[in-house]
Amino acid sequence: MKDALLNTVTEEHATLEAFASLLVYEEKALAAVSPLETLPAILEKKTELTDKLASLEKARDAQLEALGLPAGKRGMELASADEPRLAQQWKLLQDVVDRARRANMTNGLMIRVRMNYNEKALSILRGATANNASGVYGPDGRVSLV
Image 1 (cartoon, one colour):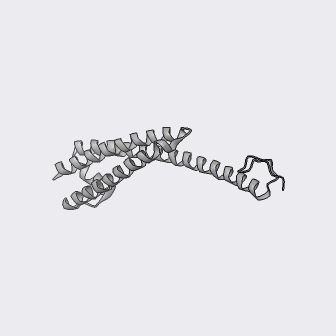
Image 2 (image 1 turned 45 degrees about the vertical axis):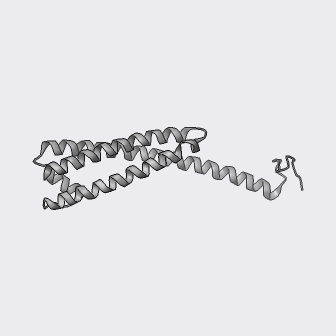
Image 3 (image 1 turned 30 degrees about the vertical axis):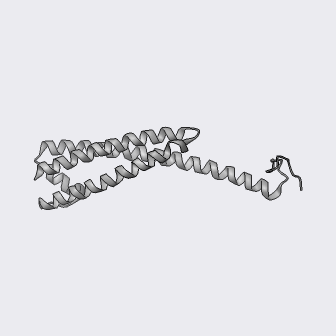
């Protein structure tokens, strides 16, 4: 039964490696001038990988339960205590989790910075529209001082 658990953790690791790599592409897209060209495809793939990871986690927890162990991290620690191959694969998985978490935090920060910039730009444009005396061109291409 632990062979099935090892296979699941190995597949989780491979899937999470793909997810972490995708986060690197997402970071590059977020740094681009026009990220809208690449972000939709990245988001679609992230959703696909997230769904697969959730499914693998459920399978892993079910396998742990079948072995009479608790779900999650505690169960994996117990299961891998006397299984060096499982312990090694679990460690690899945890390393990728940490890397993906850091990359995701970086991307989240980049998104917040971009959103703040866009909000400030919209605020300036809305303010100019409200008082029309700011020297900003109107939709007709002229500065209105009314």
